[in-house]
Image (cartoon, rainbow, N blue to C red; front, side, top):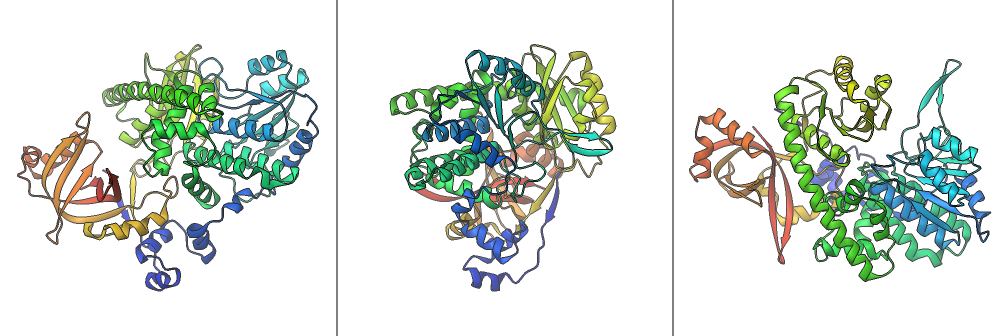
Length: 587
């Protein structure tokens, strides 16, 4: 069972409420997120989108711009090489649209997930050379592409890298230094020597920073206002899709994106919104993360991400509509494959790896592109760092998703001799290895993990111990000041004890959602929805209150007291607005 922990941050919330004109509960939640100083509160509540256009402090940015400015009207061929996920596709679109507006001739290439793998490689470089390309700009990749950039140098191709991934380190004469590939400019917020104050930005936002600085240096920036709005929306979309922390300027950027995504100039995004039946609904970060974003990702997973990029570059509504329909259909196929993979992976864990601290599962006949999604779902089910490996053209290819206590990137470094390729972040990574190395990889990860039971116990941090009845429409309108929700700015979590469960019914396409009729300790009745593991809930009820208790509950004969953790939300459907309470945990 997860550990429940009530966050207790002392402050005079009533006085702060009078000062800022905000509900005391909202201010308490902000303080729980580390928003304590007056400047932080102002930025959180009233962040200025113009701050997102600050570009000072990036190493090599002006070197790259001076070089590119010298190519105007020269006929020099530039190729943008992005990546196949949301961030890579949005990055490529931003660079393509920005360079085009500045009169530079550019085309693009997106690596095929299966045929090319992640990011720029030797094959893509040689293909560019054969096409007469003289300069390559990478986006959302390139900072670790040593072999590919060495080949580019051999062929006389100039390279500008724009990326945000971790930078490799190496030991030189007893000193730990950056290991950087060959390029005329390496723009990455994580580089040593950067004076830019915020490192946690996605690849598309790095590309946006480069383009906005070029547009400003071009003069008469007012002529680019519509383009700036569109590029901001794409950068904000990618920030959510790449699961970047929604703090500081990231949060300001995403808030701008959500407010302008329906009316920006991008016909592809408008068509995607329409085909997902969202035209008359509010677009939230959740909508991007779990509805729109997966549609852009689906083509790169199962086919070619260039089709997703083409949607973002569409200049007529009819083509955009057709491409959006294709993406939605592909995402539907992807979801079915994912559900089947998750079910099989969980079954294997329960049969063979239940006691492992780090889960490593090989899934036969599983599309390698959905391994990361499956890993994330298995991690949620067992709260363990999880690797899912599938068959690839050479050996096995895997994706990993971790928990807060375990650095997946460091774990891979300790297994470098077993891997053919690897890379990623603390919480998400990818690797390839020969099939015969899989068991050794599993064994070494588990032997060297040093994870305690405490590390592998999920901690649910409760913002406020608050009665269900406090979640009325007026309060939830104030709570919306905290949006957009996402990484490091999670949806607020509330708890109430002594909730009596009276009745239950399942619904949904696969009866995978349950609606409970409950009564609080004040005698008021509510509907409480649950999207979690229903069989586990039923078993818990039977264990706590005796065999057959769950059956009685579904028959409407329940009288079972539990404490619940819940999220309140406003549900708008068919023109009606109602408060919806969603149970997240129980005990």
